[in-house]
Length: 489
Ligand SMILES: O=CCCCC(=O)O
Image (tube, rainbow, N blue to C red; front, side, top):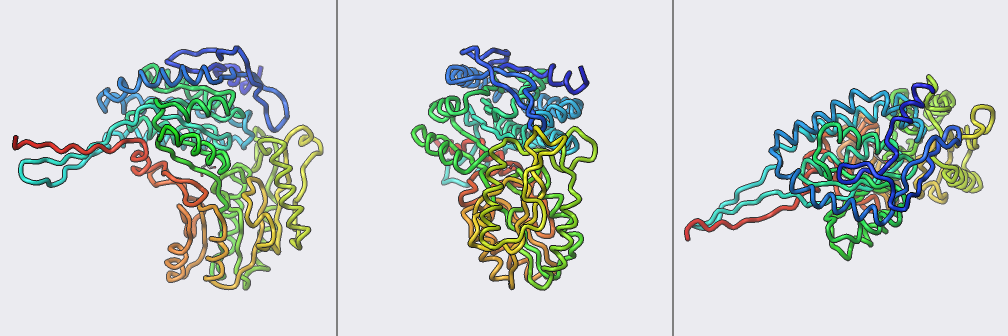
């Protein structure tokens, strides 16, 4: 057995409910598949409605225990979680690469970023402050923040570890207990994290894990009166469905959904630096990121030089099994992802776009059994093409030419999505105008990064609502209570 196989072997395969590792009530299991080889690597318990109910009950019993622990004690447990994640980063990264496909270095970066998120929230939970407000004579007006109770977190496969820590950390900081439903594609990253929470001594039932039958589990979580918040990262279509299902019980909902990020390059931008930033950002997780640059707007005066350099850089991107040294882009998660990308590219080419490089599935040799796709650049992309409006979630860079600032702001905003956006220019007046004009939750100015533990992450329009990270993130996991204290009685 290789070292990596032993990590998979050691990772728990069961549900985690009320501090116990359990098989699914049905006794069923699901396969876990490596997208780089198409091979089944293991099987995990396939939870369903009954298991979800049990997890909710365990969380409901546990949250008052967790919420009433002194802040120092809660902080200590979360610091321990962060330390254990850091200590086991190589193991967690290998598990992630095997079940999700991303290159090992990216997987390790994600794991360590998740540890940092837990560490930051371990400190910030001391600062869930209330307020006093001047009242009339004899009255003290108090505002305090209280736990919501049970929070259900539904997390995606593209960041199998950091999306869990990004939701669990603020929920725990707010004094809540959690039922986690991870993606069926990446259950092992979730079970490995649960084991760490257990090892760190979190009280039983404070974090619970139910993976398996997504529609059945989702239905129970959204319709339960005990679950007071749903937090979801994933597609806009599923987000809308969960939001609808949650209406009946009027729970809080945070939705971090799809994106179609514009990446705008003005003619005064330093081209080599911008190409470097664009390629590293686009091929992070092979474009399977809600904040990935999806529409590349280039000002006409620099179009020729920019595209030539971009094509050269994209041709150097090494595609392969994420466990191999030097690989920049792994496989796509599933076969159907390839079909969607191919349809967008075919549509663009039929309508006049030029395929500069890529545009096909890779099937030779080591690529034979995996979901590999060639890094792709399209030029001459216009608003007539599906790729202008549909989120891509893959390794495709569609280049669109523009003339001036007003035109590009209009084109960038011509989408239902509103998550991340990026632009590059050295002109201060333009920086002010464009950053105000972009209808997005996050704007990177001369930067390809918008996700930091200490800053609010989230979108507008069909990219969802609610924020994660920063103190704004914790505010999404508490109730605000007003107390009118009449001391003049
Ligand atoms: O796909 C969206 C998850 C968040 C990605 C990020 O942290 O940049």
